[in-house]
Length: 174
Image 1 (cartoon, rainbow, N blue to C red):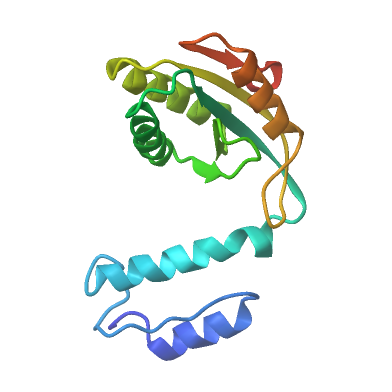
Image 2 (cartoon, one colour; image 1 turned 90 degrees about the horizontal axis):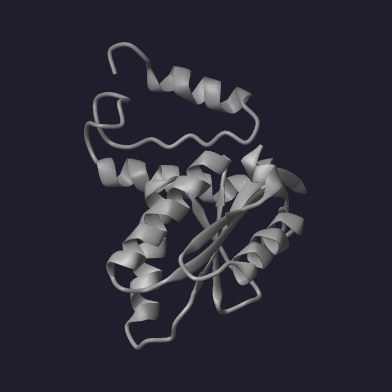
């Protein structure tokens, strides 16, 4: 790169805690030129390690819990596809939960979670399926799995919600 030498990048990386230096073939440092797939893979690998390195033991987050109301043959497949799509669209991350009938997603803001809930409900309604969705904000504990009171609260809201409704907890509303 005519502006930044690789030696300068190596020196900077050596001074930053938990930094990773990755050298890829090419004549510059901009991510949109050269092998974009390799750059994307490196970024995804780095981000995948962030929760254990940065998050600590707990954080404030908004959790969306969605429950499919019917057990029609293709409804579950439609639900999984719509859930993954809407989470990605609204910057959500899927969580694994103890209940097989509820899908969970975590968001950095209540607004993103509510917009995801609206999109998910509309997508499923368009396919003729009803969802009950709960959204709440609170403490999320990081560890091997993400758990905490907010997961239980959002799941309880989804369990109590009527088909076709989105129930938003007080903390997420404020």
